[in-house]
Length: 77
Image (cartoon, rainbow, N blue to C red; front, side, top):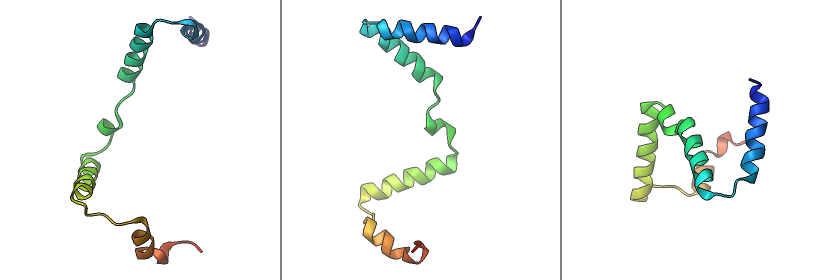
Protein backbone atom coordinates (compact mmCIF):
# COMPACT_ATOMS: atom_id res chain seq x y z
CA UNK A 1 0.00 0.00 0.00
CA UNK A 2 1.36 3.42 -0.98
CA UNK A 3 0.36 5.46 2.07
CA UNK A 4 1.00 8.81 0.36
CA UNK A 5 -1.22 7.86 -2.55
CA UNK A 6 -3.94 6.70 -0.19
CA UNK A 7 -3.78 10.00 1.71
CA UNK A 8 -4.11 11.95 -1.52
CA UNK A 9 -7.06 9.80 -2.58
CA UNK A 10 -8.74 10.48 0.77
CA UNK A 11 -8.10 14.22 0.44
CA UNK A 12 -9.58 14.27 -3.05
CA UNK A 13 -12.61 12.31 -1.88
CA UNK A 14 -13.06 14.48 1.21
CA UNK A 15 -13.09 17.67 -0.86
CA UNK A 16 -16.17 16.33 -2.64
CA UNK A 17 -18.09 15.19 0.44
CA UNK A 18 -21.28 17.21 0.97
CA UNK A 19 -22.81 15.27 3.86
CA UNK A 20 -22.30 17.12 7.19
CA UNK A 21 -22.46 13.88 9.19
CA UNK A 22 -19.48 12.46 7.27
CA UNK A 23 -17.48 15.62 7.98
CA UNK A 24 -18.50 15.39 11.65
CA UNK A 25 -17.27 11.82 11.80
CA UNK A 26 -13.90 12.83 10.37
CA UNK A 27 -13.62 15.67 12.87
CA UNK A 28 -14.41 13.26 15.71
CA UNK A 29 -11.78 10.82 14.42
CA UNK A 30 -9.20 13.61 14.20
CA UNK A 31 -10.00 14.74 17.75
CA UNK A 32 -9.58 11.20 19.07
CA UNK A 33 -6.19 10.95 17.37
CA UNK A 34 -4.84 14.22 18.78
CA UNK A 35 -4.01 14.21 22.47
CA UNK A 36 -5.31 17.07 24.54
CA UNK A 37 -2.40 19.32 25.55
CA UNK A 38 -3.75 19.32 29.11
CA UNK A 39 -3.12 15.57 29.32
CA UNK A 40 0.45 16.09 28.08
CA UNK A 41 1.64 18.57 30.73
CA UNK A 42 2.95 17.79 34.21
CA UNK A 43 0.91 18.01 37.40
CA UNK A 44 3.07 20.98 38.46
CA UNK A 45 2.22 22.81 35.24
CA UNK A 46 -1.47 22.06 35.75
CA UNK A 47 -1.29 23.41 39.31
CA UNK A 48 0.41 26.60 38.11
CA UNK A 49 -2.25 27.15 35.46
CA UNK A 50 -5.07 26.47 37.90
CA UNK A 51 -3.56 28.90 40.41
CA UNK A 52 -3.22 31.57 37.72
CA UNK A 53 -6.85 31.11 36.73
CA UNK A 54 -7.93 31.33 40.38
CA UNK A 55 -5.92 34.56 40.79
CA UNK A 56 -7.55 36.02 37.68
CA UNK A 57 -11.00 35.03 38.95
CA UNK A 58 -10.24 36.88 42.20
CA UNK A 59 -9.12 39.95 40.24
CA UNK A 60 -5.57 39.50 41.49
CA UNK A 61 -3.98 40.61 38.23
CA UNK A 62 -1.57 43.24 36.93
CA UNK A 63 -1.95 45.31 33.81
CA UNK A 64 0.52 44.93 30.97
CA UNK A 65 1.98 48.32 31.86
CA UNK A 66 2.51 47.30 35.50
CA UNK A 67 4.31 44.12 34.47
CA UNK A 68 6.48 46.00 31.96
CA UNK A 69 7.41 48.58 34.60
CA UNK A 70 8.22 45.87 37.15
CA UNK A 71 10.53 44.02 34.76
CA UNK A 72 11.92 47.05 32.92
CA UNK A 73 15.51 46.15 33.84
CA UNK A 74 15.28 42.95 31.75
CA UNK A 75 13.87 44.56 28.63
CA UNK A 76 16.27 44.92 25.76
CA UNK A 77 16.97 48.42 24.61
